[in-house]
Length: 138
Image 1: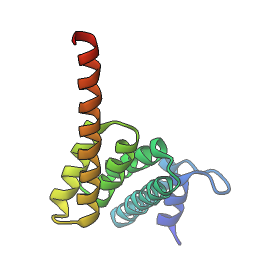
Image 2: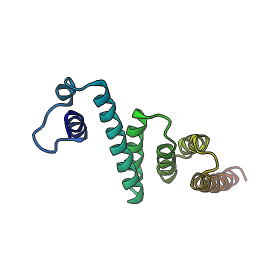
Image 3: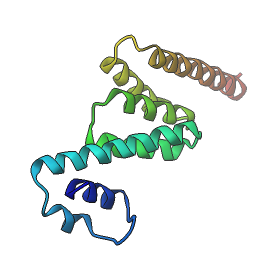
Image 4: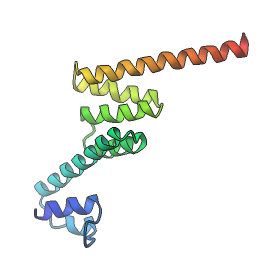
């Protein structure tokens, strides 16, 4: 417990008497601030994973984005957000996240699987666009 836990709790939302984080954080050491940052990142990361498992893609992408604000190059977070974006049909953004995740975790089988799914959806989208243009100009 201690000041770091209290600051993390206020960052996560009121779980009792509300203490604004800015007031609570005034008394923290640099090490405690870093601990609060890591706990907050972890909380958003875990929320992202939960939303992913619940197939709440928009909330999952948002939670992962909040965690990535605190650790911009975390491979698993990039992958989770990429999967959420993939399911939301935001293929270009999903590709950027998944490719970066693979750079950070070379050879990761689950990321390769997600990229294969992205490629399949790209092909599907291309075929659909081709049929649409054939109808328009064919």
